[in-house]
Image (cartoon, rainbow, N blue to C red; front, side, top):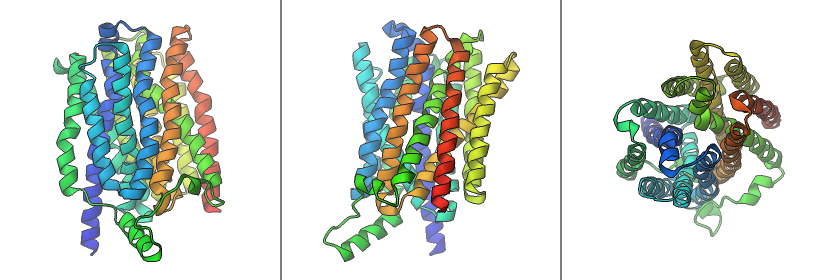
Length: 402
């Protein structure tokens, strides 16, 4: 039985890791393809910020719907369909011929990806025992920076120099993974158990996750605290993901040096996500939060203060390790905070709230750059967001412990 459970957990986390790799490819695709898209469509910095935000905006309704439907009909089925939607509209990105149609297909691709993310977190959380959830989500979510780092390397080749090739790759990979999910991905045992319990105790055949359950006496404050933290943390995450290469160029470095900085950012992010996920299970939760938000602040301050290229690379690595690792820890907290019957809904809605911040972040950064505030202004604007997120996560930990 234990051997079967271990195999179930390994297969589930491994397939979720593959989908997270594809998410990382897509997130990085926008930043890497930005120069080619700007030239092809004749965009300014503000319009480029809207392009970055269009895909992120699509994540919002996707996260809202995907998590709730997964609580009702099962995790596996919704994950397969959402991945298919993402694949189709990512491929459509290379065939559009206007700025508006470009925004539309990026929005729809984002909707598919947005629906997938809360299900990945839920599946990874439910595949292991409660005391190992941080580690499982960390291992799963480190696929995101791995995918982004891979695409950074591809971008330095002749294949990656054509922005359309990047979206061909991003659309074809999930099509290859879908049959693997259909064949190998097991349904969540916790979901199936909750479904059986619901069938035995009520006339309903499935556990009914409801939005109103997020606001009952037990969940209200937890929901509010995690929403604020998701919102401001993801705002900073997506500013860094979307604009880091461009910020390097604003600071006087070359495009190649900016791409190299992004690679270091993602490699360290992979390590940071795994380590912070493991610490979430082993340390007191408050210590993990102080470490990760303190690390983000140190990285942002280092980016503002660095003078040489080496210092900028080190600062990029420091920010990457903690800012992406922090996102993984927040996702793990979603699995810890909510019970099985509402876990997909809770993570999905929190992800949607976070995506609002993620959508606003790149657009605000683009507006600050257009207004002449420069890279230092963008980085400084991110610091209060991190302080607010840290405070509300500490309040959440106190609430969980009570």
